[in-house]
View (tube, rainbow, N blue to C red):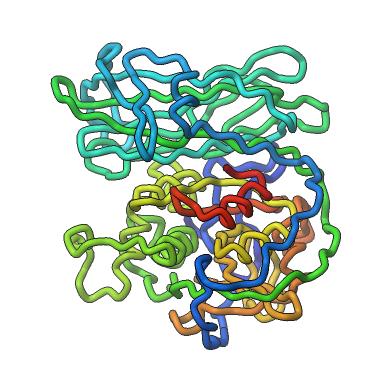
Length: 472
């Protein structure tokens, strides 16, 4: 991205009113005001979920603003409609190509190259949203060996009984040699539009909502091969978060801090500028890599061999490359980050919204950190030292006073990444949907968006915590 005035806080940010939306969403670019003067602190003893810890705090009665649904089990996959696909059982059931339903030519808009592909499809049953939604974000977990890729689409029914077209929510591969992973711009039917990774009702004030949806997976492979992608989780988060400049304060729960690796995006400034201008804009993949490594995910020397050996923390460069969305021209596509995390063995990942800091405390108490998206003026978050129109950081714990302990990648060094932010300030900038930018203009906030990465086989405590925040 390009920014001109580091102190202005005027960059584009979703989900802003649809009249204000830019063609390219800049939410995660970590456009910042000034250098950070952070203070690193010692981590507490390792407090993973299998060690003694405070009991999981009970989540409050949900405000019913989010509906998170996914297809994950063998029975789920068999309930869908397949053309050339089959469900596979085992420890990680999913959907694969059984035999191609046909062939098609695809011209990659980012390389100009046309190639022929065999394909097969799987269409989910209709999911009736418990919360008729103003926004829907799909996410998926899959394996795409070289020579394969996938497309995910969503079609829904509005509350007035009319239907959407099939919207492309992503064309994705774990690698970047066969196709360039991409979102698709300029999708709208006059009632809703797709903004990079988010399907949004154009004018929620009319009362129109998305009442139900289906997802369609198209799996592609090189003709004449037996290759196949495998998808083991696909779903979507529908939400209807009310407009609000402030949110109610929550009562602090038990203190706990998780020991999560610390990586600074700022140490990568100027590295691989083809991936959204280098480290200055890498808050999302840097945060993702921290959590992936917390869960034990590691990259091999062979996977990192492409990175300049003089660069520190090459895994952050790797994460930037393999989350990069060639249409959005950035590393901040939310589902692409989740899909990247799920390429690591035994990890699952979703994009969702949470309703309160109590929800985050529930997860932290079970040993599950979260990556959160927020925007704020410099003076709205004490100790940050910068303002941003959109930034990702990792919540790793809470102090005895209930303040938020975050690994903030916009820090001058890895040692400075650990921060403590005031609870009341932090929960408001994360959960609000409206705010004033530096020019006094009303723009939008994320309303509690976060990424959750967790084990494929969570412990009972972890499973209970995820269920408490609406994720299974």
